[in-house]
Length: 582
Image (cartoon, rainbow, N blue to C red; front, side):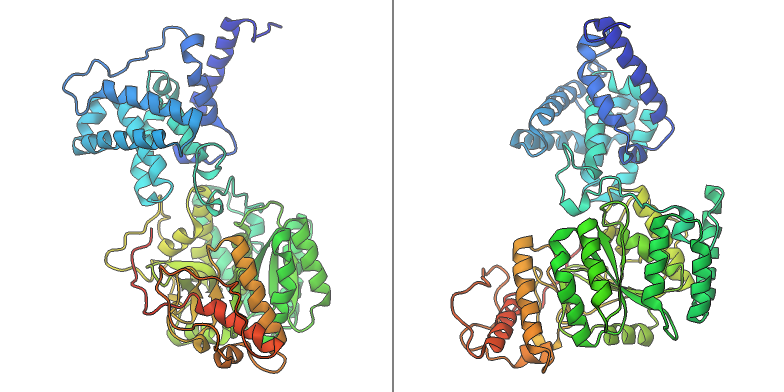
């Protein structure tokens, strides 16, 4: 066998064969599917283009340079594009020079947009490059603008990926950048929560909807969802023993991941009369495990009546949950451990629950309940005929998924199933944005334009509500307005982890010393505030929870006072103006 490292011609041949294979694969799928797959196809194409000069002879390197009086100066744009790609390869996306050159290319985008049809005819590959650059921007934030750029790339690549990346334009590089958008390995600069890698569902279709067989082809998916939703409605009417008998039968011969989910669901719903329901939370890794027992004890003292199903990510989280499962008495706890470490599993288990006729109340672990939120949420659902209710952003026109309620109905079951399929297939999208848009954006203001790429068609219209976000279900970093006595839930969304844990510990310590003889909400309302300021602060004003001045009173009331001080630090002098979300 020849040593390709010593034989350049052989190495070039291997590269060309591999590139032709990638070319054939790319012609079969949309760009966004290739980008989010496990296979680094565009990354390999980028490596191929880096060696074109020395490994592949007679490759055109100046396509569109000879166009005069074009829509844009294509030769100049190609030179800038190649310099930009080389700098980004070496220095990464955050390099000031890379950002500066990207801004320069923006002017070319604006010029070409004015005569886009002519630009496409003049220089198809140059136009495809501009579309790809705009797609990398859209995929991070303005995903409703991604479709048009993606479709143009589909057309160019399906006509020949290899020729498109081999003609002097750094299209291979920008496709690799786009492919990194859900991985964050080299180019993507996104919040860690939005880099989902491959978002494995871990479950097959017959496991996501255990009561019905999977669809035999894509056209049968709609009927499969409807059938699953109707079966869920029927099984929800059965007494628990009938419900359990069916689920035990469905679990026979299934994989561990589904059997464990069914066991957890049966455990949490055991003996329930009327509608079956569970509270749900996500316990992610060892860092949060210590908080689970404090959370459950607090729920017990609040009179929280729903059982708790804990999605336990990782060995440590699962062990912590199982220990609590054995010892918790008042609040029934059950644990389910998916195979991979992804936040998508709070949605896969919701899919299963809805398809078994079980209502869901979800909350993040970085929340604390000052009062039991269930009576108010369920009352709102009944009063207004709402099937799903979400927390929201006090300063924006979109929902927040740190707390939500979904009632299992035919509409919500089909709707949520379509959401999960869309979310899995478009892994650059953000779950919260997707749920908001697919739920009809219940808070949208006239200026709002939140959207997503490739939204599913024929979505059922579910009855959606939102929780009051000014004083009752609030997000810390956004701020709140009103009085602590009216607060139900405080959410440390987007706070730095060290700050979040410090303040959560302060709040739980207060609850633990006072709730045996007084509700936390009442104690926070009446605690002496002498020695620290409770007047509203301006949003720009800094504060610190670790002030040196001690809160007066006994040790218990000092802890309550510290918790009050934490909450007051986020209080604002007036309600925030609701602005468009992005």
